[in-house]
Amino acid sequence: MSKFVGLDLGTNMLITGISEDGGDSIFKNQRDCFYKIKPKTKVNKSSIKMSLDKRKVNYIEDEDGSFVIIGQDSLDIAIERNDVVERPMVKGVISPKEKASLPILKLIIKSLIGEGKEGDKCVFSIPSAPIDGNFDIIYHKEMLGLYLKQMGFETTPINEAFAVALSELIDSGLTGGIVTYGAGLCNMAIIHEGDPILQFSLQKAGDYVDEAVGKALDISPSLVQTEKEAGTDLYSPSTIIMKAVSVYYRSVLNYTIKTIAHELKVRKKELPLFREPMPIVLAGGLTLAKGFVQMFNEALKTTDFPIEIGKVMRAEDPLRATAKGALLAAMM
Ligand SMILES: Nc1ncnc2c1ncn2[C@@H]1O[C@H](COP(=O)(O)OP(=O)(O)OP(=O)(O)O)[C@@H](O)[C@H]1O
Ligand SMILES: [Mg+2]
Image 1 (cartoon, rainbow, N blue to C red):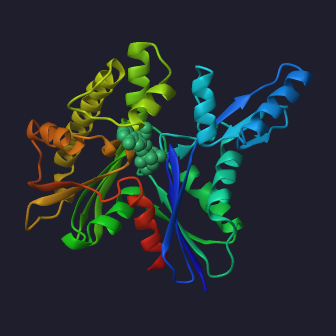
Image 2: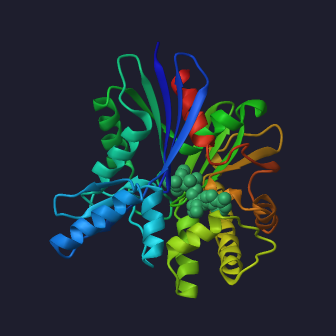
Image 3: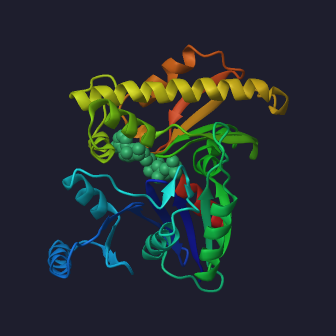
């Protein structure tokens, strides 16, 4: 029997849904970040190694003698050192400039999905090209596709927002709008009767919130991220950090909704005629904040949107929606 894998390659989190031998889907995730510690001396190297081993930290030793800590451990250790983690991916794609990125990403992927054999399929998510930035997604798509093939999988990329549609828009006849708010990007797509009509991304999402709050309060963005994930209530923030988080959430929502509306107006000729008001599904980690849908609706109200909007809903499982859709695509 074959193994089917849906792989959500996110800037902040890699999430996989795996179904083997026709069994239930099993989801796993790992944080997509690393932190390098370069020992100053040989003795220092041994003592760092001892301490990392004692904590059972997930790390590899680099050629230059550094320890490269991977995943959640790297975030915890960076915060302890009042520092920030590095990411193998930035704004939804691997950076061709950072030579450590690809090997680290490969290592995390392998730890999550293992190797494939003949007949095993892996559908992996890719972002849309941004309309407010100047980078392409081709290098990312090709390098990851090649790696997964080398790992023994039959591979196909799937657009992140379209994957969410497969998982969340079945009841609406695969017709509606999807907006995902992740770490690096906000991805949107308009789907009409199963057809992705229009899709693009914008460069403001969770990382923007973390960096803006970090700058405003002079604290590490990694700390802001951790606080935000411990529970964000947008309409009753309990600390100074959370007040600032709420302010920048609103800024992300106003920017993305107004930019999406503007782009749709410019491309109005590409839009289909919707027989009913278009439902919108929101997904991605940032939408987990309490009050997110309300804040989205408030920003929508003050925007002249070129399509009549129906209900705005959050995906049943906002973090796993992309992996779920990618897995469904792998099984089709
Ligand atoms: N419970 C939570 N409350 C608020 N924010 C959260 C929560 N959990 C995760 N986040 C935030 O969501 C963002 C990550 O979302 P997600 O995992 O969907 O992104 P990603 O897929 O890795 O990134 P991208 O799609 O941009 O490449 C981060 O900013 C993270 O801090
Ligand atoms: Mg994502």
